[in-house]
Length: 301
Image (cartoon, rainbow, N blue to C red; front, side, top):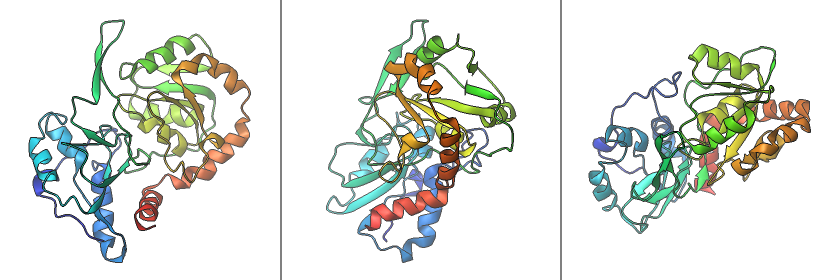
């Protein structure tokens, strides 16, 4: 397998601090280590483009100042086939769609033209103004994870359903809270430290995992790794990794935000033991080793 020799400016040194338990490497860096080590054993007609998209965007005003990258991408041989891996919810930004590239996306976003045409400003009723991504999704969805993986704790699940996190990153989160907060089965927490977050998620039978700025969230996959049944609340695009190989409805509640008022009734009719068994069955698939093997299957088929 060939790898594009990417200028170092597009592979910046950057230590991520989100989520709080991360080792500091984003998805792009983790996968680059794997493919660099194994390139000589991989037979693929796709050329790997290892731009560190997330790190580059963050260090360049969240993709507001990336003309140099646009210009360099425009010099690539357009007759070749490429693939890339991106964590950032934006996906990857290009000048136009003449680059033949397959996008493996853990944040949900795919190949999009420019930042300003794929992010809209939303005015909340309480006066907040927030940005929301609504661009094209990736070609293949990957789990949104980091190293080390979110830890599972051997603890009794005493909380029926919980949510911990910000409510201002997408209107669906506010709607979710407004509809469900008066129901005693749903516990909401505004801000917690990592230890509290980890404990509560591991104690929860169900975990609410609404989209945020992007189409998905770390919480969806943290729930699976903690053995909690995720409730994926989507809007815009569904991001369900391995959906060509997995039936997500076996281990996840999938609901559009417009149906959120039906959620209590839906959960009353769930076979919890069966779904928990299925969550624990699929948990080993949500590792970097399995994700890398999934990418290999797609680029070598």
